[in-house]
Image 1 (cartoon, rainbow, N blue to C red):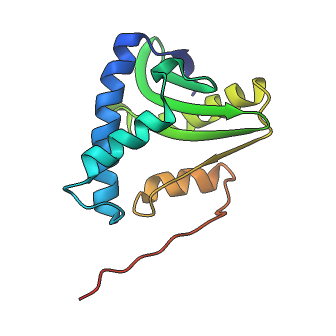
Image 2 (cartoon, rainbow, N blue to C red):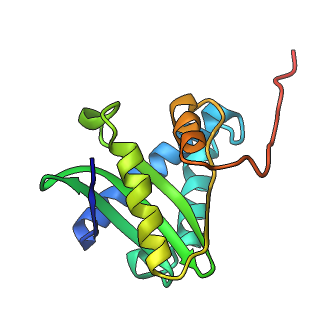
Length: 152
């Protein structure tokens, strides 16, 4: 399976931005890295720091992934050659478990390589076992690990 990547329109980016901030806040609360009361504002602040000019922020590529002309997910890549970083990848709900995540990652790797990247990195929350398995199958190695424990 292959996917095509295309740049988000302004309207698509606006919808993605609101959704991504909310999801990032939830992920951080679940992972224990943010308190629920602070998470929405902290997530918004981090998003704005990473994309001060929105979708036009230099070196960032906010992309939609399409298969057979239908949207199947998103990919946010930052490319600062010789390195690229995946800030976000998500497969839309109807297409999960059908190979779209792998196809998006492969397309993203090619996209980054074509733009001068020699390596690509990403962050994944440890409880996202499906994503961890995918990245391992694609040859990604753990380069850092952060651990925490809830105290009684």
